[in-house]
Length: 154
Image (tube, rainbow, N blue to C red; front, side, top):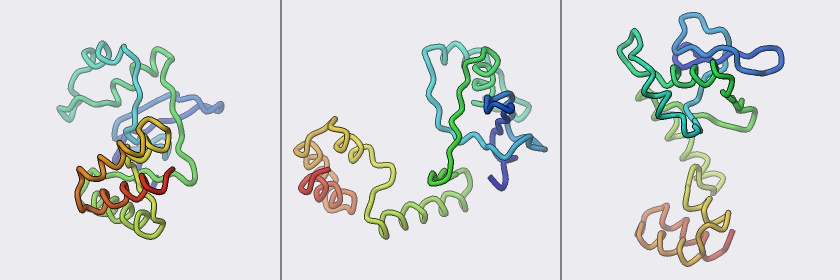
């Protein structure tokens, strides 16, 4: 990550376990930005109630993550080569993310981040259900792609 100071930053010990997490550090301890994809257990509401606004006046998700770190249950999955994390926090980064997704979808003919496609490929919905969703979307590009997928199969 070229500009980790824009994000929450996690640092690791020699065994790869998270040891610190800081929101927008002036001097990042690592280049590992926290991407914003979280899975929490049922303690999340208790932890969320415990945090207070930061010096910036905001409730920081990093403070919630720090509570999990402090009780030894924070797990961090590092995204490696072949994964793309797209920031959309500024107008420029939103445009870059949109153009990246468009390029992948147009050039490789595959959808990016499409829950309907995933549900179909994993067998959670049938071809008939996927086709119904495609019809609901009408003559949009997504509707066309989903209809084609329903007809050709996973």
